[in-house]
Image (cartoon, rainbow, N blue to C red; front, side):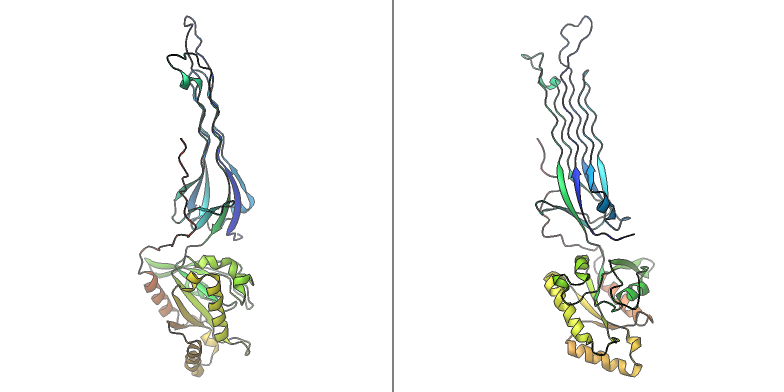
Length: 357
């Protein structure tokens, strides 16, 4: 299934039904009085977070979502039926924004979270409501209130504990396939990853963490070059970044240190907060280096990069050095029993909206 992480939709809640003007007419009861009922409430539009959905593709092609209107009131004190609500199921991690004002309405961060997107209009009053001691035969009624209409922008940011960062063809897809249940496309040419991949890494029967792999970054990504910039937002929810570096590029003119510095620079340009996240260095494709030269090459790389953080030497293809990496990553992310997601700074609105009097 195609991965879609952005969509724009129109939602319209139902209008309330009109009230009714009616009078009780029965034999031997000449002055029965008013009995016009109220109109029914219009249906509302809700968003529901569903962990079984992982893409917004349904909203790429179905852009209009409208709830039913409430029924008009009737005589004999009959109120109109309320319009049915509609529930839009969305992936966990979806941010809903008002497309016109740019204000974030809600973030769906937990499975089963239900948020009101558009409130249905209240029903109008029938003439039964206007009966008084001095006005015994009122002929007033009110129309139903209109429902909310909004244009919404949906943006999906996947929820993962660990994010993989690196140049195209650095071995990120091979690594996530080696340590998790993910099966991304793997080939011997760059840009094989065209959309984010999620994988669950099982450390023990009841110990696991989630890894996100995004398309590789190239120089100028923060200005829109390549594909990686489109998906960097998926790394903003992670707790730890693994910077994957190809320690043995096929082209001898390519300097892995310069590439690593370029990735860090693009990360800082895109989002300083993302650049400030904990980041570990993972030197991949070590099996391509003669064993006698491995230690010297790693030492030279770390020295030239002036790296002070944790360093892991692995070969994702040969599955070498993966267990220490997995165990250390799990210890890092398991310090928090529940993944805490920093709220989007744009989130400032009450998703329920103001109460209507």
